[in-house]
Amino acid sequence: TETSNARTRVSTSFRPIRCGPSQTRQKTSAPQNFPSYESLRQMYDPEVPEYFNFARDVLDAWEAKEKSGEKVQSTALWWVNEAGRQIKWSFEELGFHSRRLANVLSGECQLQRGDRVLLILPRIPEWWLVNVACLRTGTIVIPGTSQLTERDILHRLQVSKAKCVITDDSVAPMLDSVAPECSFLKSKLLVSGKKREGWRDFGELLRNHSCSHECVNTRSDEAMTIFFTSGTTGSPKMTQHSHCSFGIGLTVNGRYWLDLTEKDVLWNTSDTGWAKSAWSSVFAPWIQGACVFVNHMPRFDTSTVLKTLSSYPITTFCTAPTAYRMLVQEDISRYTFSNLQHCLCAGEPINPEVMEKWKQMTGLDIYEGYGQTETVLIAGTFKGMKIKPGSFGKPSPAYDVQLVDDLGNIVPQGKEGNIAIRVKPHKPFSLFTKYTDDAQRTADCYKGDFYLTGDKGVMDEEGYLWFVGRADDVILSAGYRIGPFEVENALIEHDAVAESAVVSSPDPLRGEVVKAFVVLTAEYKTRNKDELRAEIQKHVKKVTAPYKYPRKIEFVDHLPKTVSGKIRRVELRNKEWGKS
Ligand SMILES: *[C@@H]1O[C@H](CO)[C@@H](O)[C@H](O)[C@H]1NC(C)=O
Ligand SMILES: *[C@@H]1O[C@H](CO)[C@@H](O)[C@H](O)[C@H]1NC(C)=O
Image (cartoon, rainbow, N blue to C red):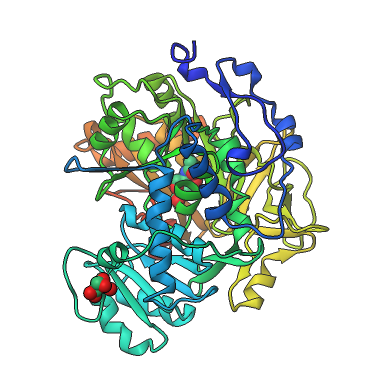
């Protein structure tokens, strides 16, 4: 039966892509029924209508199915916090609250279709309501993390000319101090139990409004969201997506990579502020009618994660490689994950060593996904496909992915190149629209027939992609090109290494050399550092091409990371090179 063999449940019956309940699927327990990679590519044949609104065309359709009693599982959002509070919304409740909020946005906040709303909230249910209400009103949501500084906020407001901001007590004071410089800002909504001068009370407004609202009939190609993304240089850019690019395009994530159905409960530990949480926490699961699970952890804590996975019926789990590295260092034998079936990671490549340990501990593989704020899933490992540890899989059915040189010419197979997406003769609808107000930067990322991701990789003879690094992370030492990940993968195989970051460091002779910043595992913290350094260097020379070994090793207590847990190699590199 299905429950006795839950771990091998897979999907069948794919049809041409349509979002929402018009497209239903059953899972069976026969893994061989999962379509091959080649047929996935063939089956992916999305329909993009002229008008599309995710709230109306997908969420309201699930709501209708739920009301008719035909929906298998009717939780859209399941939120818990550390104090044991929980909130569960069905699609109907999500619809009810988000329509009231839509009335607030077009009522008190006087927002018109196309106006921009800055949203800075932690992982609380209101974050999801704002996302849906913006869809319903055709306003453009700009999500930002709670860790933004006053300067970041001012910059985002001034560049975006947002007319409304929605945030909580922790960020409101910063907003108040920059607001005098933002005359275009018309309304401020506070999610809080308290009153604050100059702010409207989110909860009170919501309670005061009717739950009937007619969704704006947005065009598929109309702007839906803007993410501020920082590059390695320059100020953050505004990456703009249309209603269809995520609303339809993320089917590739939800249906194929995550393999979600109405029965599934997806937990992604990533922060809402991080641009791409829309990927995982709104569109991909709700396209499939699955439940979004959220644990409002103030910070990533391994024992909370393990407890959560074992005490809630989470079927599908995604977290950053850093988090898996921490999890496999725990003794997880006292936990059972009886519902867990599918584990994924994104953001950075995962070390093969960590995948293997996770598999020993849970019996489950980790499926990798690779994408950018500008895109939906670019490549990944899909169920039913051989996993090659160290490779992030094959191109997603959404794109024709090739490795190209800096001019956009395809490089010979096996050679390093820029990871690129073909945009001619047709630009894929699930690629970002543009960098808002920056035609030059937009034009710069297209070369020949391709959009260049800015990442370097290699494609092998079976079409698997191997990540080399961000163009800037690649180390050039004595004529060799060395990607940080291959060195980090070798390092972590040594018992002393909990995690590491590899960057270039100046060297009078070689120009630059490989330097590793290493965080030691608990048992090795007190060992003699010089001996340990020599031992680790010897180990790397043994397991990978000797020229890649780190000539410099520095032991550190922790590595600099982004909010979403990505290692900030740029910070370490700048320090090495005396830049800041
Ligand atoms: C809610 O409605 C009541 C009654 O109409 C009104 O007095 C009150 O000011 C409203 N509150 C808000 C926040 O609009
Ligand atoms: C989890 O969230 C991160 C950041 O938003 C994203 O990159 C990743 O793809 C998400 N995972 C899934 C399974 O969607």
